[in-house]
Length: 280
Image (cartoon, rainbow, N blue to C red; front, side, top):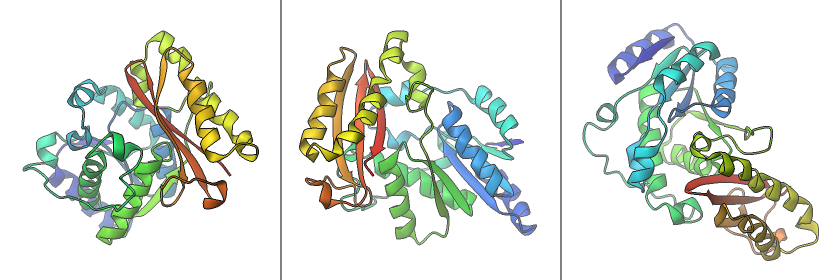
């Protein structure tokens, strides 16, 4: 496994790989790797000749500078995990390498980025699109792997690829959870012991809500979920929306969508956690 910090060196490595006719898979990350990331990487390794993983905490997608400063960074530990995973190339650039000058591009995703995360984190998805499009240009992968925990981000990436006429195939991967149901996230490491013990209430509530689809309206189910999570003194729902899985627009009736998804953001203490549940 090679750790590369410049675009030039990575391009040289990848040009040699492509000249030999090998396929390239790509997993973009912000580091602080956990089993959720490793599941993406394992699939990438299995489905491509070469797996590239980027580790880059992208400053343009943070609307809260404190969140950027506090985001966990553990490059050495990450690389130890990647060595064991079958990853061939790690791209770990500094911000100046990716942004030698400010990226002023503004993407138009219509209504996709106006709801949920887009509403509460203005500019977030534009920053995501900036960095992912740059990384796609650098790596030029055949396939790229993203977790379904970031459900809205996945929709944004697909729309960005469509708009840019990129040929990369976007591979969605199921949410990986802890044994108690908590969706794996780098942010989980910042939870106190008490917060970590309480955080699985989010998943238990979402899971319990699935069976209620038959007996409750959309609005009543949203209220049921919010009330149960907010009943915990350590948890506070920022939003819970039930949306169409393709358009991400909120639905009013179950018949409004063939693939409704419940998307939630919850503050556990000061740490913001997201999750989602399909109402199939």
